[in-house]
Image (cartoon, rainbow, N blue to C red; front, side):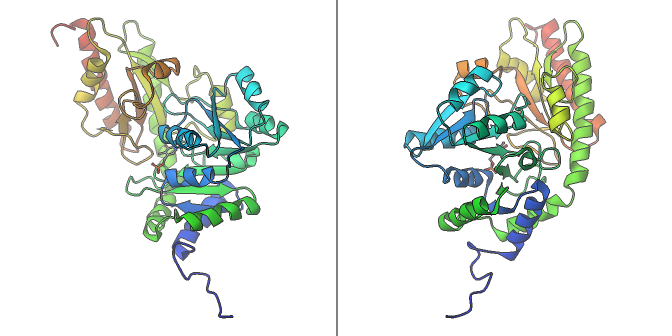
Length: 365
Ligand SMILES: *Cc1c(COP(=O)(O)O)cnc(C)c1O
């Protein structure tokens, strides 16, 4: 028998990737982490844990790629998937009665920043012998630690806050217990979805400033959310609604205080309806003059990005489903960067002024 080295083939094991895995497991308080090539690879890995007889419970308001993967696999009978509104107690009880094996949680949600009470889902899952996985991408382990609340797995798209520089696509699966980690790691090597070492190197570089970046993201988000909220309160305002868990008016503000260590750098807001002007034209009036805030889908990077869910991140959703989920056609999602907040506000304010001018003179614009 020849001696087997720890690192003999990078799909199976790599020292740089292991350093990132150890750091992520440490941050989440898990036994170990599997570092994957993307967030979706991490989700695909999770899906390997389910079989034909398993039922997966998924929130209706979930990342579009997660919805596509879970429902795509369910259509091939890999397992059964049930979409529910986690805020609806009766619906949750009804699905629990069906004997599900896994509950998938994503909190705060995208794009409305609604929260799910993780501890409450854990209690419900335990009562029927099910396990719980949380997509912790939006909060990051610095703001929220699902494993400490009793969850079994945490999944990340490290593409977002963890790397934070919008120059890597990556993911991770962190398990609370070693046995579950071993199962995930076995599939990761088997399928070949492990992350590249250079990506791990870049993500480790990003991690070093995570705490600083998150503080700056949140400080800027707080300032912008409060100013948008002040505008919203005015008569005839071009801002119809603001969603950020740090606002005391936010429906889940108390839960955010309890469950999170901060409110994060993601917010969304809705522009006002303008009579005689289509919703898309209202949105265009706002985005037209933006220069440093790019219109783009990603999030969690140092540069601010703005997205229009109805035509971008949530385009695949049927219009009625979007409407019933509260994702209106004049809703914009802002990933607040770490730029000088006055620069950001000047751009946003100019955008709001363009929408206000439409209200005053829709025909002339
Ligand atoms: C981006 C994202 C994913 C997918 O991650 P990729 O790195 O793009 O593959 C999954 N979940 C959430 C919440 C995300 O924001």
